[in-house]
Each structure stands twice: as structure tokens, then as C-alpha cells.
Image (cartoon, rainbow, N blue to C red; front, side, top):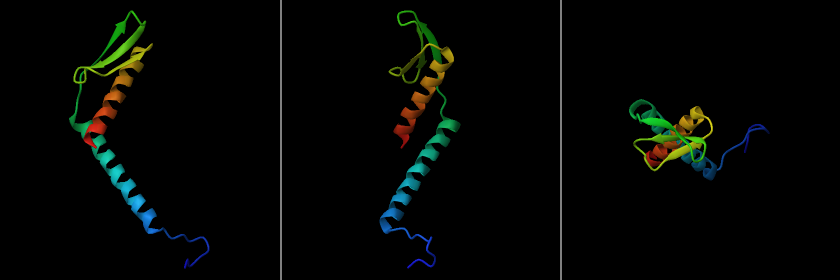
Length: 91
């Protein structure tokens, strides 16, 4: 029974869900740390005349690319995409 009317006690299921969420967050943070400190990839941006856009590419992941009308956004897009792929591989 709660000591005060605004007290709230968690059920065992809620506690288990919070633990699972914390464990997942810990894995993601570990992946982020490893990605930031150990992994370096080679990126480049090229102009594609056929689509009149820039394409961001990564040498280590030749099947991935990112199209954008702005070269900086193409570079940022491919970096984020590679990060997501690496994160999924690590977790």
C-alpha cells in the first residue's frame, strides 16, 4: 500500500521492461563509443549527371549510397546510413 497518495509502485513486468530498455540502451551506447573511437571509414561525394544530384559513397560499404542535391547533405547522409548499419551489426 502506498505511503502517500502520489506514490506509485511498479509491477514486476514494468521493472523487467525497464531493465530490458536499460540493457538495450547500454548496448547502443557501447556501439556508439566503439564506432566513434575505433572505426574510421572512407567517404566520398560525386556528382551524378543523370540524376543531377550528388551521391555520397563509402569505400568499405560499396552497396550503400545517399543521394542529395547538396554535397554536404550527401556526405552526412551516407555517414548516418553507415553508422546505422554498423550499429545494427554490432548489436
